[in-house]
Image 1 (tube, one colour):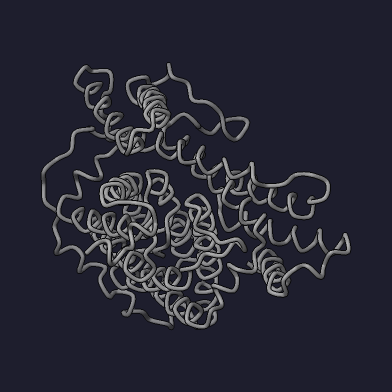
Image 2: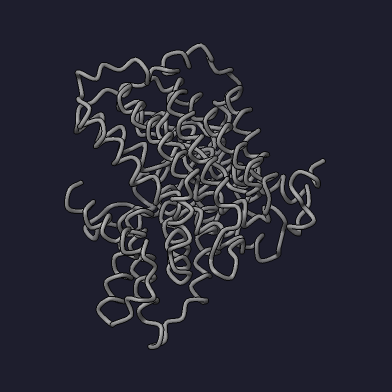
Length: 453
């Protein structure tokens, strides 16, 4: 059955590899079940309800990706977009979380229309192949940067980022950072020996080491500082709390926001999400070697449709924008090539609603090595970018895109800078004719975004 539905042989994979890849993707994404409720609770939302909504939206979106597009990509509440909703829309602008969720719902409907009319696909295809490779490398650096932060190795300092002190607070910060380093070493060794599921085993072994450290007294839980016990609990989630957010996006008083302000909020979500999604698809598809000779993803239309459906469904359930996750690259690195990888990830998200406390117990220092290793694997694409003098109008924009993503902590900002610089450099050097017309439109839109948003 799996062979018929997912065409495993055609994609040079098998059930075992796909299952391991799906589990790996889920393990690297499971942190969202803890992080998203924490962020959205700042907007006044119930954490348990958000956790359930996040898991269910992830299940719906990832199943759609598996069955509609047959791609190994998983979806969940997008990092950055959830912070934008909690701290900007609900915090700085002062709108209720119900209004924010309605904006996300409408954004999803707009995405569905754009996907049906091939607009999003056209944008994907208009981006030059060299720039797509730069985006892939940039996402690799971005993922690695997230891993370094999650591990506790990278902290803020006088130079904006610096190496943590292992001596200070050794029983919390220090031991976690040290365990992340050990986990990275274990994962790298397993990968060098070509162990199937090396990234997954790296996560599990690092977590087990953490639990042993807790038993030995080297790791001391301190909930007030954000360091919890590493041993999972066996409590069952209270499903009734989902009612606190379910369909609440439709109980909105427009007199409190105004139609113009609401449209601005919708457009802001739309702009950021469309390029975060495109950037993720470019990066992960490049790593999986799924792009054709023209740099196009053959099944991008159903992939974008799955993303759009997940966004609207997630808003109804009670979570911020649901989008394709860059952590899908972890499953691809583990060998995932078809929708079966996504289906396995989706099932695990559904199961997580029953045992959410277990999955949220996976510490960030255990998943951090996986993200750093995935970053390494994606950065390898840089070797296929030509940096010679005959290709500078292609290479410089790719370079700007790849350094902007980790430094500005945004996939969409990297794409924006890459597109603007690509158009500007080609125009300035008399090569404007080779630029696709849609690239000019995108460049103008990005410039307007920086002026007015």
